[in-house]
Length: 120
Image (cartoon, rainbow, N blue to C red; front, side, top):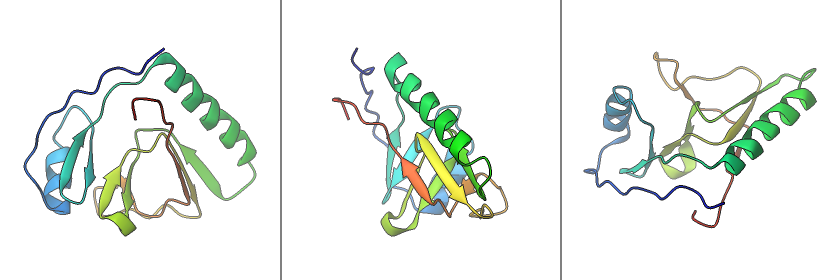
């Protein structure tokens, strides 16, 4: 089964702080890559099945460890690329470090996992 078609919407370039202010007011998710805003698209049944299986399996493995696994609703700061994304799966070991007082951006992911498809 193919992934849903991506709908392209063009946004003006924003700074990282402008993006975060704007994104917090949106009802849909958008990622940020060096000033570019990328609208998030839906995912297929297969994508969701893989993602939920990963979260459950990794969560079970990490049960006795100082790490937590998160699904795709956690916004993550990627410092090396001046980016913010919603990875399909994120693992954070140790204390979660928030990017700011809003407590909605993790800035210390240990592992991020993206599930790719032919359309991505």
